[in-house]
Image (tube, rainbow, N blue to C red; front, side, top):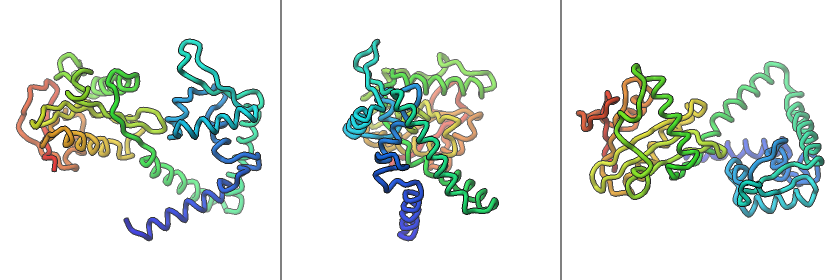
Length: 294
C-alpha cells in the first residue's frame, strides 16, 4: 500500500478522535472513558444479550466483562440471566442508566453541532456528504466471515432469504426440491461448508461449498443482503470460498447460475470464472462456470 495513503488515513483517524473527544478519559465530560459510554448507548432502552453486544461491537469477552462490571458499579447497568435459558446473560439499563443515555444523546448532538457551527451552509453539505461516503467505504472493514453450522438460526435465515429472492426473480419461481441438493449434511465439514458474512453481528450474506476430494468443488447458495450490496461482500465471499476449497484439496471450483442473476454472472466473469459446457442437470441453470484454483 502507498505510504502516503496510510499516513492520510492515520491523520484522519487522529482528527476524528480529537473532534469527538475520544482521547479523553472523561468522554463528553461524563467521568468515564468512551468505551463505557458507547456500551450504555448500545444497550439501549430495551436491553441486549451479551452475545449480541459482543458480536455487534467486535469485543472480546474479557474486555466486555470488565467494562460492564464498571458500569454495574456505577449503578447504570444490570446483568441478569434469561429465565428461559440461564446460560444467556442480558444487559439492561437501570433508571440511572436510561437517564445517562439521554444525557449522552444530548451531549453527542452538541458535539456534532460544534463540528458544523464554524462552517457555512455549502461547507456543511460538503462535510455531511463526505462523512456519508467515508462511512460507506469503511463498512467493508467491519465485515467478518466465519464457517457456520448450517442448522444455526443465522444460517437458516440466510438460506431462506436466498430461496425467497430466487423465487421472486426467476420467471417461473423457484422450488428448492427441484434444484440440486445442498442440505445441512452436505454443507458440514468434511462434506462441505457454509460461510456466513456478518456486519456488526448481523448476517448479511452467505456462500456454501460441497467438497469432492481432489475433484472440482461446488459453489452453492451465494447470497448477499440488499442492504449490504455495493460493499464488496460478494467478491469477498468468493475469495473466502476459494481459499477454503483450496484447503480441502480441490484444484477447480465450479458453479451453476441463472440468467436472471445478472449481478452474480458479472461478478463471476470479473473474478476469473470461465463459462463452460453444462456439467450438471441443474433445473434452474443457464450458465455453468469454473475456475482453476492457483
